[in-house]
Length: 139
Image (tube, rainbow, N blue to C red):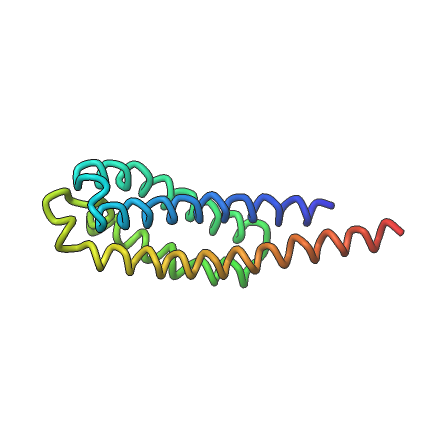
């Protein structure tokens, strides 16, 4: 039962990260189609970037603490990329450069989205597997 609850916690954390990345991608798409102005887009995305980085770091740390080494190793490149962006001060979107960097920012978020969807599928598999395993022991 404990393993299922841990995987369920991981699943909800991954869903939270997924929602943050999708929100950023939607904001960039709205800017591309001129539904919102650059200042509003930058302020929306910049509010979500740091919580996304922190949540990803917490998820990687929880994988490490609970002994799920393969999942932790899978998260390390994404975490390294986020830390690298933060250390170089490139994690926030500049209002004056947003149109020049629009395609790059969208590609970056699409790659993040693909990584997180794979992580979501793996987490969902382990939630179901651990639930079935717990049910097997209850008989």
